[in-house]
Length: 206
Image (cartoon, rainbow, N blue to C red; front, side, top):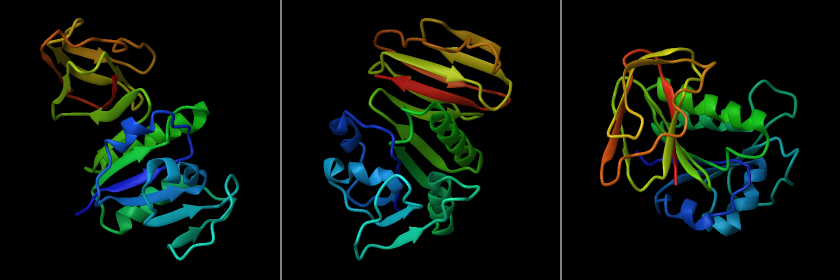
């Protein structure tokens, strides 16, 4: 099954970095003002979704789902739900972090929700690659300058970090104390992160 790329309206400045993550066979959903990135990304929409309160609805033969402006789901949430209905199990979210903090936090919640559903999901922006980590170990190469672990889903226990400047062994990370912020992979090594109980957001910073 092809991967679904969902493009939001947050700013993107380093288009080359984002374009390097794209695949020729991606199924691409542009959400409302995410359409502002279409020309710079150089990828045509497979589907357009939005209430078009922040971008003009385009005249096109491409499939468009027009949403009401008063609704419970954000355009991005609706796009994720629609992609799941269409059978996608792998997601790349771009243009979803930065700018308004409420939208950024909301979109990190979407990432975590997909992860908890067993989907393969990554978000990317100008500075970082964002994933989630649970019982299965995640690895961070030394190409990244820093990495951070954040508990936005409640307490995470049994957190172990290996091959990093600040290692941990069977630790607890909570939402109210940023213990896992700004770690570094040891030179020439690959760091390993694992969690026994709960889930963490993993942010790998270039």
